[in-house]
Image 1 (cartoon, helix red, strand yellow):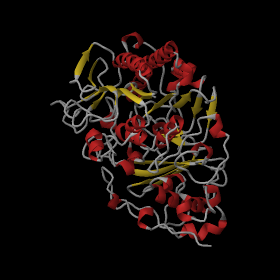
Image 2 (cartoon, one colour):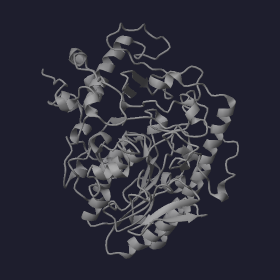
Image 3 (cartoon, helix red, strand yellow):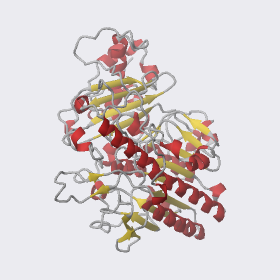
Image 4 (cartoon, helix red, strand yellow):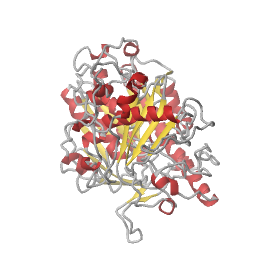
Length: 563
C-alpha cells in the first residue's frame, strides 16, 4: 500500500504522474468516488489503519491534546490496528515512511508502534524536511539524513523490505508512505515564529525535478478565487486574492507537482522490484493518499480539512489478481472501508467494530448478489451492500499553508462540522452542518464546484423559488423535505458505530422498508422526518467533546418509524 501525503485529485495531480497511470490506472481499477472521512493527516491515517471513524477513535487532530501519536497510544489503539491484525493472521508486516504526526524523537519508543516485523519511520521534527529528514528504524535511535532526498530514501527502504518479505516463509504486508507532496513543515517554533502553528512552506522537489512543469497553474475552476464567496462560517469573510498571492500559489502548485515526480519513480521502482522477485502477479498493490488539498478554491489559501471535494475526494487505485484492468468504479467508498477490504482480500474474518465494509474491488465481489446485512466471518464475500453515503467530520482549526496563509485566514477560525457525501443513481449531494449551526447543501451533478448553497434555515419562512437552479432543487418545498431526510441521516452518522455506520436508515426504519435516500423520499414519510430533531451544536470546540454536539442516535433522540 503506497500512501502519499496531502495529494489532490480534483486539481489534476494524477495527470502529471504517467507512471501511476501506467502501473495503476491501466493495470487496475480506479475508484473515482473514494473519500477520506476526516481531511487531516493524523486522524485520517488512524481511521484508515483501524477501519473506524474519527469519532470512534477519538484521534481528531494532529497535535495534543486531541490528536497525534500520543493520543493514538492513549486511546489504546497501538496494537489494535491493521499491522497487528495482519500479524495475527499470519502475515509479516513492514512500514517505511511517515506514520502519523507527533511521532517524534521524544516519544518514538514510548512505546514503539506495535505489530511490525521491521520499520523505518519518518519522525518529527524532521518528518517533512525533504533534504534532511529524521528516520527511526526498528528499535534503533533516530538518525538524520542530510543531503538525501526523503522520497528516494523511502523508495530504497521499500526495496529492502520487499526483499525481506519475499525471503520469509509467510505472506507480507508493506506500507510505503512518502511525504510528497506535503509542504515542507518546520517546527518546533522559532523566536521569529511566535504563533501556535509550525511554518508550512511549499514542498521541495528532488533536484532532478526542480524545473518541471514551468508555467503550470492551479486549475481555474469556477470556485477558484471567486468574485462572490458563497460559504458559511469563517469562509464567507475570506479576502479575494490579488495577483501577488495568485502568482505565489501557482508556483506552490507547480512545486507540489514536481515533488510528485519522485513519488512516480518510487511507484515504478516498486513494480520493477516486484517483477524481479516474481511476485508482480500474485500481489495486491494500492495507491492512495491520506487526504486531499485545496489551493484557492472558495478563496482558501493552501491547505485541507474542509468538506469540499478538493479536500475529501482523493486518489484510490488498486491492482492485482482478480481485479479488473483499466476499470472504473463510481460508487462511493471511504478510508474506513480500506481495512475491511484488506481483511477480505487476505482471507481474514471481518471485525464487528469496523465502521466500513469491503470495497467491490474484485470481479467476483462486484457480481455478487446483495444479500442483506454484513456478515462477519467466512462467506462475507458473498454478501454485498451497496453503499451510497460517506460520513465526513472535522474538529478544530484549519491550518493555512504558504507565505500568505496566516494573512488570508484567521488562525483562530473554527472549522468544526459534520457532513455526509451521498452518491447514488438518483442523488449526488453534499450536506454540511457547522458548529455554528449554519448549513450547506450542494447538488453536485449540476454544481460540482459547490458554489450554490441550497440549504434552508430551519424555523424561517421558505425562500422564493430559484429559476436558475434545475428542478427539483429550484423548489424550496422539495429542498426542505430533502434536508429533513439528510439531517436525520447525519444525526445517526455523527455518532454511529459498526453496522449503524453502514446501514444508518435501519435506525429509523428497523423493519427494513427504507434502505436509501430514494426510499426515504417517499411522501408517506414527510411528517415523520419533519418531526425528527435537528443537529444543533452547543458550541464549537477544538476536539471531539460529545456533550457539545447536541442530540444524537446514541441517546435515543432519533425517532423510529411505526406504520
